[in-house]
Image (cartoon, rainbow, N blue to C red):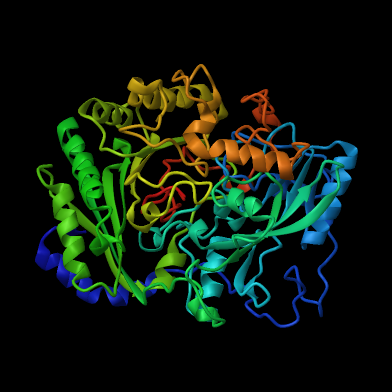
Length: 591
């Protein structure tokens, strides 16, 4: 590790290009051709395989039901249907609706709660094989099928046309739920949320008679289905139907040249990680560090000079040994190295602990982007996360809670607290223009804890719930929109917000996630899913329906299939891949 001197910083930056070759991509190229495609994206020359029906006696069953990110939840459905086209989705949905079976859909598998992995689930529709990324000339937009991962989308869009989308930082997240939830990531301060470039959606919906059909909805003012597009621009997955593909084109794009229809990323990025040791970290030092970062972000989140900075302060539990500031900046910004150096100095000012530089990198944009990875599918991991949009830095009393949360417990405790940057172009959009209303916050605060042993569930759930409740003691235990907070992000779902024992604010969970946009979302629900075929613990309710759904317990831990790859692993310290990622990595950030 290099000492934090400007000479060392600039020297390391000068030689970092050689080290950048060590960043792994971890993704194979997705099919980027447009020739011979049908209206729903599949090649007419090579028809898709038939949908596969995987039942419990099939050796593939365990693989498919354990794709979820959080092993606290497990569905044991009658079958998993692996589909390859929108038409196959229609067939499966029609069959399920006729039989009265509860259906859910899985794309990347990163959902934090039990939206898919729930005991009530009868059929899981797995769209992971629907993963093409290509240009659709009929819509003059790029098509991203719902089963594509963000990494596949980034690679195909960039290598094929030199463009990208400002979506999340974790390559293994599936496009299916991420885009519908509003998705933000490393390029969002410069280009907005991913939904700000969503031109249309192709969705399988179910009408009042119970018949499934394919609908395409776009943002065009004269599109009679425009309300369905709007609802998918931040309304969250699993609410209105099953998205089979997204159509991406920037709203200000003109012409027919695909290379001009989405943002162009920088040729290279500057990436810096600085860390402060826990060895001499006092409560005052930690509070100063977090406050410095939050105040810089609050004061500068609207400054165009800093729009390309993506950053997060990851405060790992003291058992990890460090606290990390991760920063990345477009390499085409003049003086970028000096800007990042100054940011490190501002964050560390008055802390009294000299930071070290863990790594420096000047590398091609795609290589940096695809190097971020996550532990999705690490079946043994159990975790809980809780988050909220911040309009102001945390108060001294709240910072005391953070310090206590990160210093309690013995051994390798898997607790972390993140502060993650927002602002820039994200906040340049009217809150009613899309279903995502959170367009004023400069930060997101994120708590998580991970563990292996099911017997420790109550212990760790109580730990994070107590800390979160105390953090928001002045607003009923949750981040009620107001002077200090701006509610919660639906892609970081937290079923606790719908529990009146944990949310005593009197403000319903949907106000936290959707604010004033919720009544319109209910109208869209009534029009496009009048039978409430698509629902989960935090799904948009039909007008007049109860805000709560009955909670069902997870199956006993001993019924869960074992994952031999994780059998000898110790408690998970929640320090995995870069930017998991939305978000949970050694370079910090949930996605």
